[in-house]
Image (cartoon, rainbow, N blue to C red; front, side, top):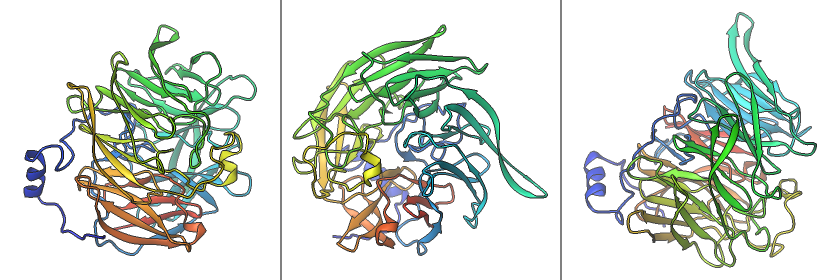
Length: 462
């Protein structure tokens, strides 16, 4: 059922706060913005340093303008914007599967500059970010950490490498993710289970995680307490100490017997997410890869003590490649079980068990009581979410994309976080090129939502 409602009012917001956690998400605390990153909401794939997948901005709403395709010869999973307002899309080109940075005019959304980077691993460079000077920080195929700055002259816009630091890794390894720590270092993790950081002076510090058999296939997150990394075996909290990477704590999880269909690696599909009602970062949440049902795992950030765990979704849908959305005491999980990723995305991930499954869909909200040590399911729905959900805190609405029908119809969906009901849907596209491939949408300060697709991106404006 599609239920259309008027925009939220101050009165409704007050009702949500006083009626308790089962009526709506609790008021959350935002941890201090990372001083080495761009504005929260748009500077990285997951919105902020803690990977909350929330934004302070209102989205395009229930009655937006028709969707505007922005065709590019690439798949665009990372669409960001810095303090200067320019849109930066890091995309994987069709021809050589190498990343390119497209600089887009925020008004027309037309590309005004492009910088092609050398090819590396499939995920290398995807988890990039924008720093406090509106530069995109990423890694190219050579293994160098790059700061890409854009500027405008009489000849137009250009993108240049402003700084470069080589990261020396063993042959066959590659950086999968980079992010800024609160300690002024640029942190990174690699496909073969290494983590490290680059100091402001350009020194590189690296350490292996676990026994050397672990892999990192998702992004990292950070808080004042440290940097969180989830491998395909365990979650870590790391800090820089002297010239070393210090493991503050490590928590292993049930990684299951194999990769599930609709996942890209054999292990957790989560970027570890900081959240909490007091500081916005007193807790860390991931999902494991247990079978038949995965569990939500919540840890205390300061020491890794398990706060609670809860089996999630249903036996037919319990698998996810997506990061949890978390704000206040509420966590939202979207199933990707059975999602048909292109074969290239899973070619190095091992066989899935079972080999194939239908895309099940479904989402769930879990509320966490840190003091009582409990996780409680509030609602489940059957929404076939085809994108990482994004919680608009300004609108009190969850945004995602639905994938329906044999003709593959894609729609932008607004979901009520209080009860999981669909509030409205807006047509995005039809057919395989409109596939949003479980990529996350970014909401700009003016309410425009930009969603990556197999054919570039699509914009939905108010």
